[in-house]
Image 1 (tube, rainbow, N blue to C red):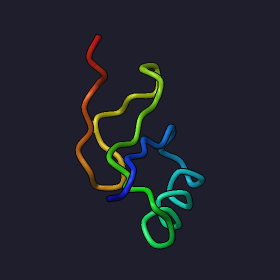
Image 2 (image 1 turned 180 degrees about the vertical axis):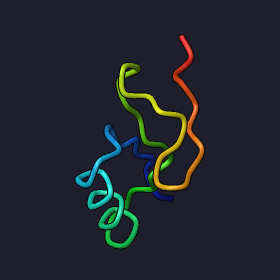
Image 3 (image 1 turned 135 degrees about the vertical axis):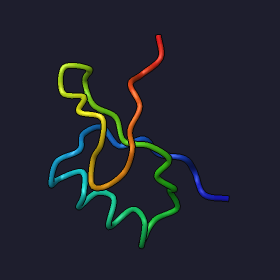
Image 4 (image 1 turned 180 degrees about the horizontal axis):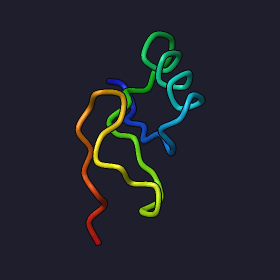
Amino acid sequence: MRRKLVVFGTGQIAEVVAFYFDRDSEYEIVAFTVDSALFAGSWNRRNTRPERR
């Protein structure tokens, strides 16, 4: 069973992290997160949701 991973960020580094973790690790990326000040509603053609508090 793969361990779950949340990636902080949505920039180029987050894309590189996602690429490598998807292909060569024991982790499954289950979400990307950003600070609420940077929340835009979508990223990389994927819908996003604000955090719940």
